[in-house]
Structure formats: C-alpha cells, structure tokens
Amino acid sequence: MHAADVAAEHFPEFPVEAIDWEVSERAQQQAGVTEYDPDTKSATIWLTWNTYREFGWQQFCKTVRHELVHAWQYWRFDETDHSETFARWTGSLNIVQHCERFTSPSSALLRSHPWSGSC
Image (cartoon, rainbow, N blue to C red; front, side, top):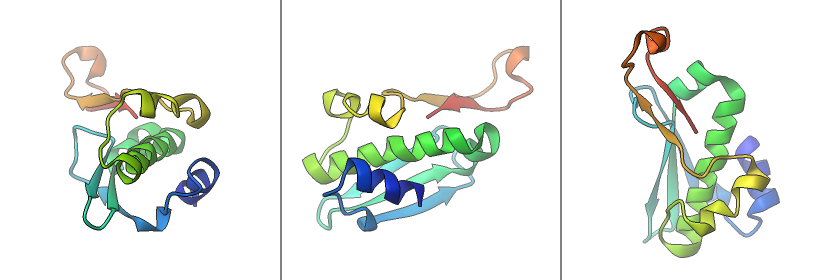
C-alpha cells in the first residue's frame, strides 16, 4: 500500500499498476534496482530482503520511494539517473539522491554487520 499511496500523491499520472515488484534474497550490492522495458512502458522494481532485515521498515520504505522515482523517470523520459529530475523529489519524499552500495566489511567496526548501506 505504501508505494500506491506515494505514487497517487506525488505521481498521479504515473500508472503504478504497471510496476512489477520483486524481492531478492541474493542481492548483496544494492538495496533496490529498477528495470524498465521501453516497448511496454513497464517497470520491475527489485528490492532486497537484506535492506528490510538489516535496516528496518523505515529504511525499506525510503528504498521503495527512491525506486519509484526511477520508475517514474523511465516512464516519463525513457531513461533514469540521479540528476535534476531525481533531485527535485528528494525533499518531498524524504529520500537521498545517491545511495551507498552495500559493501563488504573492511574493518573490525563493521564485522558485526556484514553489509552496510542505505537507500
């Protein structure tokens, strides 16, 4: 329901029902990714289970909102990035423009959390 509510409020013309949602339990580099098919104008948003498990519901919702912007960009412009068209949504959606990738621990400080990142 969160994604539909966000889309209705911020992207009312965007057909959110054209988005397929998938959850990956294997992804270890990203919190989420959006794939787009320009022929059908459909998007698939992949979210990682690690994001929810490690960072909780609030961070997971931020990832959903972040990926919704990418899906909207694809739908509107047939491309996506983190430039001006993305930046204009960061404040109203309470998201960051550039996400950190999940990274392998490189110090004793990070060993208690095998992956860290945000999005």
